[in-house]
Image (tube, rainbow, N blue to C red):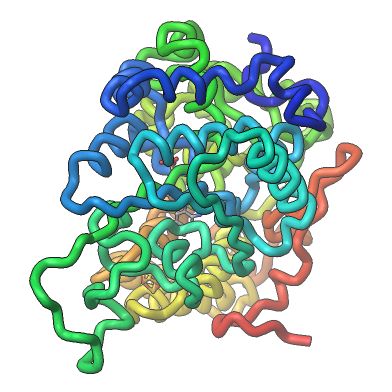
Length: 458
Ligand SMILES: Cc1cc2nc3c(=O)[nH]c(=O)nc-3n(C[C@H](O)[C@H](O)[C@H](O)COP(=O)(O)O)c2cc1C
Ligand code: SF4
């Protein structure tokens, strides 16, 4: 399959973008009704590339059909899922395509304003977006205000309900209600953290400002679908997962990077492309970010599609994969990722912050040899309650990830408990990517020093 989204060389000007066919998606959207645009996306069966794989056409039509007249469109460019680097790659290569998708979204839902929310630390991508937006504005493409928001480093910034808080100038603390029910700049109480006695009284039902949030790669696909049609989009991929997907692969591979592949391709083919079998070691586990259960060596022929990953009890997520070979102790991986989730949990829902802490502590006790068999009971009990009353998906990630590790690698846990130490200790980086440069992954070394209150140890 030829690359559809990842341009071979970086597109450096709006003229070059137009010369490569850019702009025809927006032109098509301008010539047809919003309903027709949503129909085309629904027919394409595009699934959101931000992690959940939600159908884009359905999301757009619920924002259009829902109550409220003042709407907003948001591009989620936070790219916080561990092991993902595809949104930054797309933005570096072709910010015009993503902005075109956002302009189509804003036009279709008749948004009063559009936002691109991106981490402040993504300096190169922000510069690319600022430059592209200025060119597109000067060329008359931008028909409503588009704002670039530089957000914090926290994992939760990418969670859509927390992202709206950040756009409003607050901390990345997820709200209760989804963006289409409680969008940007609604002044009534939001049934959440900031709802208190001092809220102004409501005078009749307020416009909930339905807000559309889509991932960078989703919006890049939107522009291409509008330009080339749903049938073209469906020429590759599977019935339930059409199109291509931009995968990030890191870990025990000789060629880490971002690869665009046809959905439905076996995971094994992607791993071969990245050199996962070149080093003389066998693949022990593959993690799809930190949001999904682990895949084991027997599941490497699983097709890269939403339905096939679901069928094996996992999830495609944002298609960011960490490969671990047979030198790896999965207890250490579990403890490292559980700690990541505990640190990143915001603590608004006590079972989430306390549960992820208790699970991480028990895993650390198993690793240090202080803990006995009863630690497994402690972990199991907390896994049952960690999601209680949760506002967001983060503790579900903890539950799915840790329980899958216990099921898939009981011998690693048994070996630890038996020997009172790790039989195969290894230094493992937290898979939060800063850059992939010259075939090398640069990790965020600050993450290891981050404390559960989001300060950093010196
Ligand atoms: C803890 C957490 C972190 C997330 N981080 C991101 C992120 O960095 N980028 C992203 O696009 N979606 C992220 N998501 C998913 C978003 O909440 C949302 O589902 C997505 O932006 C929807 O876009 P899509 O429909 O185009 O996939 C995250 C979700 C959770 C629970
Ligand atoms: S579930 Fe956890 S991360 Fe999500 S809002 Fe509640 S405490 Fe914060």
